[in-house]
Length: 452
Ligand SMILES: NC(=O)c1ccc[n+]([C@@H]2O[C@H](COP(=O)([O-])OP(=O)(O)OC[C@H]3O[C@@H](n4cnc5c(N)ncnc54)[C@H](O)[C@@H]3O)[C@@H](O)[C@H]2O)c1
Image (cartoon, rainbow, N blue to C red; front, side):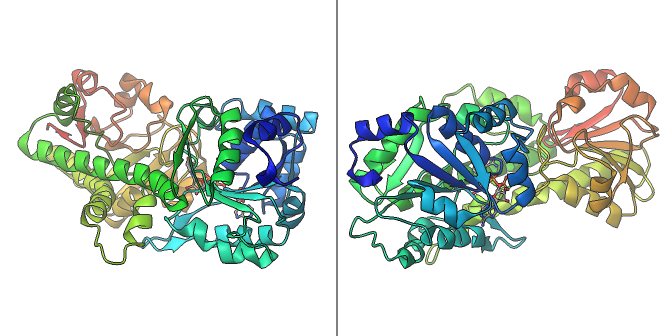
């Protein structure tokens, strides 16, 4: 069926009646929730992934994104109903689908070089099955211009975009792991930029059926790509600003969080939260999509914020050294417990986790480094260069908190103190109340709260 010959109402009726087939390429943290929301809303959905194990499990109704609340139930229900199935055969999925969505990783390497091979691979596969009247959507976050750079690949199908043979759009995923189902269903409006008015109309109809917060249509595909990238850049730069102001607060002996929350009572001020650094494969990655796609502009603020945010892990080690020195102890041979290997609480994701450079730096100074994370195991600890321990099983000279897991927020500080030779906490995620920690006799240091 040609999507581009339908009115929006006709499309919605066909969609709800299960007559539209949607193929979602990439069944990871974003693709799997999205595919299953479409299936729940009535579409016939094919989830495509290169990982055979993931696909086999999904076809048995087994969800592999276990951090996502309610996703297991939804996948099991859709597989049972026959509205969702998974495959590794992307070409056959494209042959069957009316709408193809690309939601695979878009990353950078250590130096910020953009890595988009999975996107181009998927476009190539789709071109083998693309038919007249289909619509191809990119939902993965991408450097502006990427979606349009897929046109020559998609046109290998023999179809021509400018003839209106197929539609092309960008509709970025505006969510994160742990709240994806909630967010996709209507926490924020859906951004859509399409190549023509007809494609835009049909996609407004499709996303309205799953997103109760409505649609923001953007006049170009490139503009829609920029929206999502800029959201991430805004966060990174503002966290960088918060970190810089927090470093100033340390130097001038004022408490950053108290100053920030007071300043933020004025409606034009939104100072973010300082900390050990910015992790994950979104916020620290997207600034490079702007920096490395600029030809004439040299994006100074964005670059500086990125550098500063990466520096914060080393600052955590500086705070540790200062804390230990105040007890006349050096870092060499100090027994340090790093609490948290993941980049944030509740999600097993290591990409640019602050713990990784912190452990490496501590090892460089010959500290004796241990780690614990409720989502990890001894193999993870070994991979990042630390020894694995259970939470309260040793005598620590310092505890460094790098992830805001609930288990750390709810930690029994009295038990912790009994397991420390020096009662020193360096909190990179503001997980512990400094007043309570200090009342219990800890030396508590955090980014922007330096009181020895
Ligand atoms: N995770 C988040 O919180 C989040 C939030 C918003 C946007 N995004 C963006 O969404 C996109 C996807 O991220 P994610 O978190 O879902 O990634 P992910 O790593 O969790 O999942 C990606 C999936 O794609 C599969 N894949 C890789 N190459 C493929 C190919 N050629 N064909 C088919 N499948 C392939 C992988 O096997 C994996 O299952 C990225 O652009 C990311 O920046 C992520």
